[in-house]
Image (cartoon, rainbow, N blue to C red):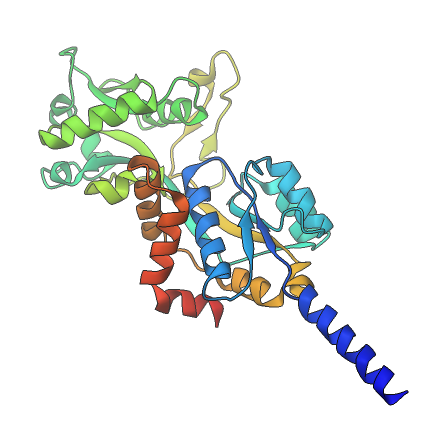
Length: 316
């Protein structure tokens, strides 16, 4: 009888240990930053953590990812790059509501106007500077008396937003938007920086251009207050009826994961709760993968190997 009990206990312990090391299924969101983060998480779990993880090819539908994390069935365990408040509905339902999903400490994403650092050195540093006719004249490419700024692509909501901002800051007499596809703009940026020419443009973080070029944000926007952002961008007269005369609200960007991992793979759950991403590092990953075409897994594994101290802090 004693032998049978010991054998049963050993089998239960073995099954429990196996369950506690279930493979972690990581989402495969479509944008480069998310892909980079997903492969870094997998490289840590498969490497220093001594467990097993897989980036699930094509697992990119955000609603399905959230539902899978909620079920806790191992179909998908990790949402690699949850931008808030963009995913407020998922947050409210699964993190605040059912509490089936948890998240780490976020990093910040921003949306700002930028100039190359050499233009900041020439005195183009703030929106107050943009209100100077002599500054706007530096950016006048077509000779019509107005400086150009890249507001974004034609189908982006943010492209309208920046036009509203320039109107609200009373810069419409001095500046006009240049609305071209992102790839066209990136070619313009490369050429402008090579020749140290003036260029003013909208961009966001994290993105690879911040790792590739020395850029300066245009500062001096008013702090956010109630009512400072009043956008009606779906209306026909959106530019006339909208106002936006304060700084953009930063995004908080999380790694979210299924709480079921706390039972199914406790070490992985602890690691995911303690990951703290550095936007400048994410910029570099995006540069390697998005611009230079390197394989995400190769980039991730090399970074994990070269940054053992950072990874150790995430694990311990």
